[in-house]
Length: 467
Image (cartoon, rainbow, N blue to C red):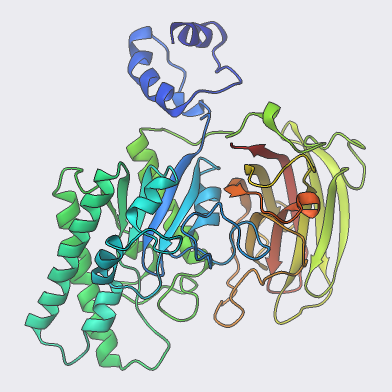
């Protein structure tokens, strides 16, 4: 520890190897006494922070039946869709990795309490399962199904109070179990409610009012427990209006679940709370040590600056057709693969590209791997590419190239991002499947909802063996 502090004093920088979160915490208490003024927000973390999702459909981050998201499902390795995992990984600069999906769509808090008593299985998704993946934080969404199933325009005030109080009792039981399991609970407020299905205006109003009451009481219960029940995070105000209806572009289109943009907005609040609890003043530059990288040509040095494509790197069309201008450039002190894309046609209202890194055959079945890289997306002139509405990063098997749509084609409104994407993304951990790994790839999907030029830059790809 003393040597580390002396190094900072001599060099006014941090050793390239980084430090662990535990070391980081101890350093905070020593810096002022040692007379060091260098901001500790620049320190790197040696390992990602592991996070679990728990609760209802808002927490159900993928179609995987298994709670352990390192396990593979039918040919796709990684996350798809609008829900939390890709956003948390990106918004946190890779600091946070999701390891457990313990969300069960449609469940009430009473059903979740019952779930906690279920016997061991891969699909029960209880609190012990979340903890078994090494998660130190667990993000909760629960209570909305209690209100939807138990309250309508004909429900009396006394009955509404019973529904809400029962849910709050169940929530406290669940949060205590999470804290006893060694995880810090982060409970999200209920979100917007303005369903587009056949629900009467009276029922919608009754449930919106109940959601407001529930959120107020829930925040009081958690904030009044002095940390014993973890944290409460208000995300309703970020995605819903004063009446409780979703803001434009924040819902998938069904008026119940967040869209891609909605969950990214939620993730900023979530990551901010984790940084607060961790005591971190900023995000890390990089998670994994470059020396552990199993990717070949990760610095894009072959064939070199000015070449069309870096060796070991390929690009494919994602639905319909596009033309590409490709070049390897030096930018921000690193080598980037740049691709300027001009979509030519659409298929089902969308098109896009997939950028792939070849993964070496040294990976074996049951190896647990993870990865990260830098992503930059704009309109070619350092302005938002407003036709881009989604991007994803994942490790996957290339058994069938178009293995799954990267969005819900039925209800996704495909709202443009309206910001320049400038992220450092981390994914995993992911278990290498039994199927031979020889054709597996590390992929970036960029999807657009309209014809119009956009530019993608990627840099510093890393894939490492976690265990």
